[in-house]
Length: 444
Image 1: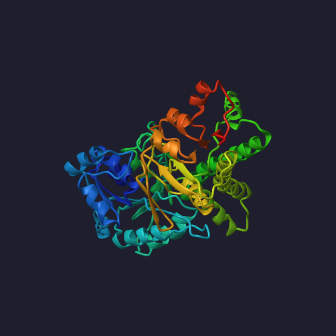
Image 2: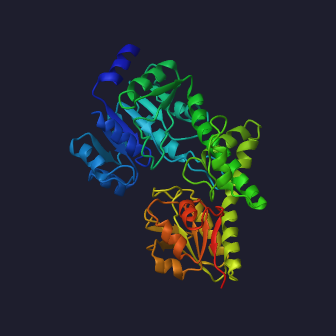
Image 3: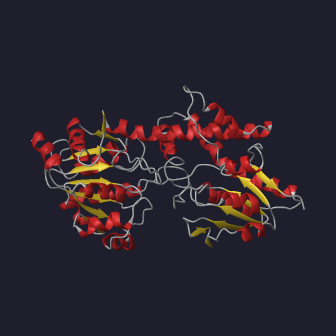
């Protein structure tokens, strides 16, 4: 039976169900469709479903054509009808896993998807959880719901965890060529999972259990969080010492061994790095263990928006102005360059802190036309020399490649660069002047 199942998932005409058509689910669905697998995407948002069925992409990394070609060929469709899970041979759960206000994991979306899967579960199904979560979720939450149907895991159905590894805006690593970690509840589950994903993912990486796969994802993002926390604290130290932190990082990066370059910035953003380590912290608190590195890194990273706002305050003070009553232009509100994602973006914290101090805040971001913050809606403004000259201070929070940094340096009255985006311009214009956070602050 197992051999037949492997051959089925390796070679047969299959229907692949993807629950959640966001940054993870839609690229996964398109990649599977490229290999000829028929994909049914599930989402609770009517507008999103209608858009996909019309051949439209809401994901920056996918063009409309990427979606439309598969919709037209009958390889991709979207629906809100979760009962259609029963039509699928394999189902991937790619729903959000946010944190609650107390920074505990919110698994309500996983549980809603799991209940829908359990209601439609039939013999032969492969179920894969891809949503990032704490170790133990697949075995402790998804498995009992599926087994409540009377079907036996590893024999009647197959259950795996395979963490998403999406890096929005990355031109080199996409769904197909990013190695995919797979852990199964049983070895048979893992084998079936590998057989299926191997059809449209170049490399699969088997691990011994679902817990190992879950922890792998958490480790990847905790590694980044901790190292970013270290370099952010180094930035604060360097600032106190009057040393250029970017010069130090670049010099350290010339070492060909034992060092990996991380850059300081205004804080952490995106769904993964600011959030995922807290899943592990929460899990370990239930086991009476304190994750000290994780908690300290989170604390340091969370303070970086305050550090940036203090630099804006210093730049204004040098011009005998206060934050209160000043107009501050923020360049970029997305969490990273050249994407439209504002989830957990430190720019939103910088914006809120400046507004709390009485500043009028404008922003310019070519990827984010509007931002809703605390009930207020701000719209992006066009970046022009006239605008730069009219505001009291400009702060670069996200270093989009579309910004004209020569114009920013030339026309800003006071400029704080939290990303070192103007380094090249300053090296030319200012003959290698130190790369400080405060690039420019004109005296009245």
